[in-house]
Image (cartoon, one colour):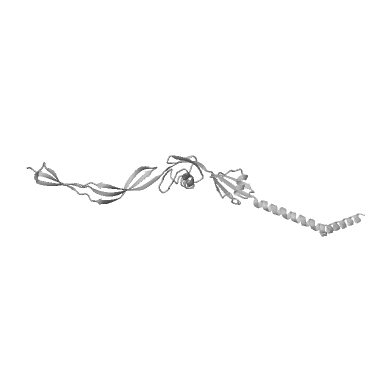
Amino acid sequence: LARGGKLMVERLKRFTTKSLFNGPKAKIIIGVVAITITIVAITAITIMNMRKTLTISIDGKEETFVTYKGTVQDVLLDKNIEVGVKDKVQPSLESKVSEKEIIKIKLAKPVEITANGVQLQVQSADDTIGEMLKDEKESLEEHGIKFDENVDEVSPSLDSQIEDGMSVQIVNVEKKQLVQNESINFETVVEKDKNLDKSVSKVKSEGVNGEKQVTYEVVYKDGVETSRNVTSTKTIKEPKNEIVVKGTGQV
């Protein structure tokens, strides 16, 4: 009886296996299982590929973390980091992030600019004053401030590093050419005459001033003249010396 029971179990196993893997339903089940396994595998691989270790550096302070976000903007939103209009972010917010990438954020600092009696508050994330003035050119002109780095004076200097709450002074320098006519004074020449008493002195020939054209380079700072230098001189009329006769004798 025991041997008969074992035989029946073996036959039932073979029948079940044959029916399960060879029947139409069996093929459907196998297909569903295969698709499910494939989807799970693809999902796992996708999630693993999305997993990235990134570093965020804000004004030099770094933080390393794991994220599944795809772009710089999504990463910052996920970390609750707000970026201002004048803040600088590298790479750009639309850039895709990759493994071990470093996102650098430089926060804008308040700077006060003074020129021609006008004060302007700006926010800048630039490194130097020179870079800031270039980037803020339109804003400065809107407030009547014009800047020429080749002529105007800036304090602190253009290569100075921007610091939080610093003040920048711009002095507008203007150079003009001024041409004007000036007189050339005549000289007095003394002729000695022993036939005249030493108390006698008379003009033999009247002197006449000459004329010259002088060109100046005039420098103005914030509209006030600060220096004037001669760049060229042209004689228009030569002066005529005055001749004076002076007695040397005793009459």
